[in-house]
View (tube, rainbow, N blue to C red):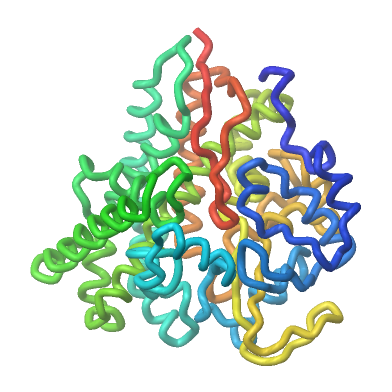
Length: 438
């Protein structure tokens, strides 16, 4: 990789001195611009050291408790009685941001299917017992048995994708590889025709984007795309009600005892959850694995010398990349955490991306080490009742793509620092220019 490319290294960030010069009480890591520029690391470094449970005033997003330490995050994530998901799982815009959005033409009703707040409900944003019933309905799609059935198909597709790549010519790894494999897998899980798979990529991006971020230019365009998304899956619901397909998640929702009578907003909310959960996270981890191996070339050498390290490398990538930067909860009662009193109704944000770099728990956390002693020691999948339902499928896709890469290509070079996504929730890459040397 070119020497001009900046290491993803918190201590090397140019804003570090500026962060430490700020009064602690004003420190706010919840800024989408920081994630776009990959310059948020010093914020979390300081918060972990000085205030791992930190009251954050309103800025771009609502006021909230920023929980940044590994152990503090675990305490929140494993206590769903006190920290509820029903207030939403990601940071909501602040009142000031909402006013700006309304002025720019955003509709503030309908959530993802209209504007940036409110809208459809998903089971991850529910508490037990309803959460457990709905999650249980779709979990057979990613059961160990079903993954064994899917593995040969995923491997065949991964091989075909890699065999179609140009050699000696730069191309976009995100578009040609990461998006393709995850969209193919997700289309299969939804029982969709493969020719429609890239609609899932677009719609997944559309849920999280605002006009001007490179996906759409206006709120009208976003509403039109989201209406198409809703229409497509409402049609699929009607089809599966009449003619279910075995192993298809839409059929499972349409006929499951706990979900067959859900209203359309609840159904569409679950489709959004499964789309983003099955798309953004895996695709950004596939991209992140190649990026990390180029950032730490000695690890790439280690992997080529010993492909048996692939499972360990997969877990290390999921930690180091952390594809979802945060999850939000709402306090159901007053609660003391790390000496701070969280009041009933307060928003509490678990910054997984920070906890996964906690020096007090993980040795050399900023380094990418594919043969770590405990590679599965990470927060990326969450814990407790909301632990990621598709975590094994994500690991399987990453494992297979690297097994197939190592059979074909001795080295894939990342040519330049990849542009990031403007989001405090999805931590990802817009594109990644690479070359496979002849």
